[in-house]
Image: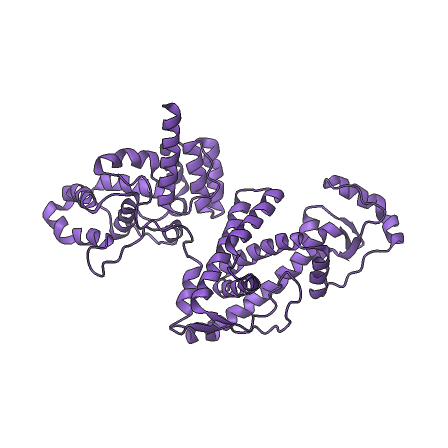
Length: 452
């Protein structure tokens, strides 16, 4: 594997001169392969954080604070001079990652546009004007005479949207209404003869629309290049990284027990009811019921139990006790014990395997007779409602959960389940079954301490 990756240039050659990059052309830089991946992962944390915030219905002020925190945490660099390079490189890497399907393009386009909006609003007025000019938005502010002619209408609109009435020196732009669709849809502008009158603080909508339009075209172009040349040319080096990044798990490693690690067989029935997420609780109950799980289910549950602190000897005893009721102890030792030891790094290449993340579980494809996967994605609505009711989720929350499921926000559905059962918020969201377990144990321990 070569240590440096020459960054390809896109067909657009205009370089950005503003403090806020517009990503018109790929940087003419050499990028180390490990930085190629790490920069992309850091930016992906920002975009997924924005996606989670929007899905949870955060208000505009809350989103502004969230974006600031996400950028501060994830987009920093030890060398201040490299921060801008990291920003640009990470964008172009993820453009390559998310250009490959319609769903990926749609998500990336929405999140990048939202990130751009918030960054534009935090820029200085001078920098905002530079962005305005660089995007080729040559609209001029309306004259004083025109402002006075429509002032009463502008005052009405301002009051309707909760803004102060425009002063006599307020700046307004007149633009074709179709260039600010979100303002028109939200009834936040005055329309007259095919034009929208937008205040200076609403310019972000116009800028974001232009940015989104450019990026949408660029993604289509990148997809054609990826399909026709890049994927095959880079099949041994870059392609595996690109294809894995969109499903990457970005959280902590749970291959070793982190907290509450003294879990034994006698604890399992109780903690399965109190602290297992639905995906693991379902597998655990099916194992108890059928005394058997297919390979996908054994892997998903087995690695989870390893991550919560079940020692190898206890794991062997647990699985043997269940499977022997169906296949006999001798067959278990011959056909199944090896894979359990293998998961604990005691056989084969002796790899210390990590428990599955939510992303991996959601993307799995269980067949008939399988019980692994994500219930929020793979259960029917009736079965999911029944399972959630059994866990103690109330009807009002259940409707909210179903709404998240219909919009394919499966991890947020799991987060709402956690919050309903535990009576506690989970602002970080659920990203891993073992995180669910640890957070559950923390809440329960806190309640026990309070009671004591």
